[in-house]
Length: 329
Image (cartoon, rainbow, N blue to C red; front, side, top):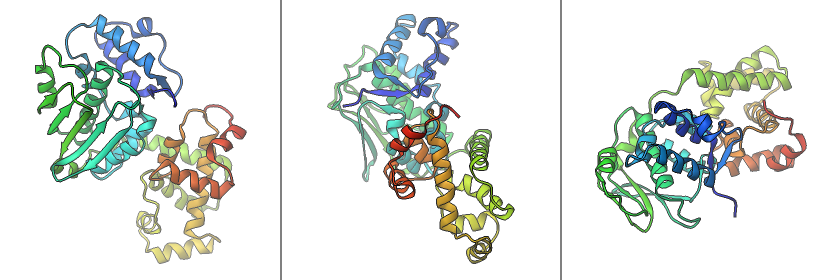
């Protein structure tokens, strides 16, 4: 069993919180994490230290109030590209191991709403860890939608605190403790809410980086370059159809097929070639997890990316990376 861990970008939240208290987190906690992940034990110790420095009740809720998509890294920004809250939560659930790999989440949709549940199969990380994680997810739904959404119910496995009023105020719903599992129940009507726009500067940076990577490994004719540039953004958003690319260029699908054929290409060849070239460039970097690369390439799941990469190269992405790793981009 792999060690429980969480994304370093998520841990930055605590540094920002301590700085807001007028403290120096670098002196207290050391340098910001340089790798992609931080061990759960490290995160728990950091939270315990923060609690000692700020002994007021419900530290987890104050921490969570500062959460945003950037603390979830690529997964968070990819979720913002979804059309509504339900699709964003589905994407977060599929790729949760890239952000919060502690206990696996189970997601079930019923008439009452969407239930996200975490058991204790990999142990109980403690009240601070649990409460910060669940409160952060609720705050993220608010950040995504621009509305102060209130769940229908929140359950924690941890003991009941002396004062539950901060929890009732933060969540805006019944909150229960000493339950068999940690659970979050969201109202059905909230799932259809549209998301606020993604950070255009960040998305432009992601697209520019992708195009620079493509130019470094492959030079194409000007007409193909224009189509490929549009395809970069569409791939990241998961819109990988001929019709989507045609709409981006105000063409009919038939007209787009004809123009590609004039360059000796089919749409599928353009899509596969672009994805493969980007995949190999991303894999040469030690900064991105396989699940994040899958998201940037528009795959619904990491397993789908793994299958596609195997068809392109005859190798699993992890094995290819070991042979070609060259350091950070």
